[in-house]
Amino acid sequence: MALSMTLEQLRLFIAVAEREHVTAAAHALNVTQSAVSAALAALENQHDVKLFHRVGRGIRLTDAGRLFLPEARAVLAQATAATYVLEEFSGLKRGALRVVASQTIAAYWLPRFLVAFRTRYPQIVLDVAISNTEEAARSVRDGEADLGIVEGVVDDPALAQWPLGKDQLTIVQANAPVPEQVDAAWLRAASWVMREPGSGTRATLEQHLRLLGITPAELTISLVLPSNESVRTAIEAGAGIGALSSLVVSPALKAGTLHAVPQALGTRLFYGIRHKERYRSPAAEALLRLISEQDAS
Image 1 (cartoon, rainbow, N blue to C red):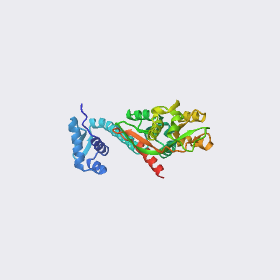
Image 2 (cartoon, one colour):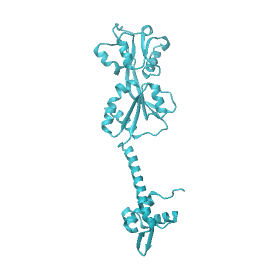
Image 3 (cartoon, rainbow, N blue to C red):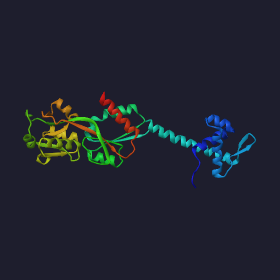
């Protein structure tokens, strides 16, 4: 059986039933008396039942009307509650935000924004996962995350990608003297400690090396490790040279346990990624606005 009654019909029926007066109900709801009468007539005709006794100017509920009144109230209350839920989500008073970020971003760049977001929107549950760039893109594409923030460029037609932040990639080594001028021959001869394939840090390094005329296949790689911290500690232990975010190596440079190669690799971008066709949640929009505000300040 098709449901043909509307919430507006229920609202008008309840108002009339509670006041036992069509004109009083119309005034209370700021509608015309004819609109109220038409809604009640349509409700009765649709279901072939009389909800009111109409005797002279008086109006009283029939037995059917008395049985229907608590059901109508319950339906309208549930609809109101559902409306409040949507309003709370849009007003950031309820909900969750699922973010996936690559390691450097999640560990060093993003936390200050998450703390500010949590302070501003304490009712929103934050769920933050850490993955490399490729895995983060897959999570966003498959709907496991609302928003991704990654270091590498993502080649996926389903995803929108835009610059969100920036960083400096720095080549570092431990105790060996750093030459005043580093050339392609020195970089080819060095022993490298690398992040794993799929890492945005590795992809950015390989992109910069190509600009210097060095292909990744020419490098001597001593270790491939799955995190920034493991790469940094291996370099500190003398395993070779490596390229890491300035955010990662800054404490070690200050402490003197690592030394930076003088040639800068240039600024690299952090990218936001999201699915082009999925719903853009108010919580995700709020986090992006907050990042934009704090980066501009």
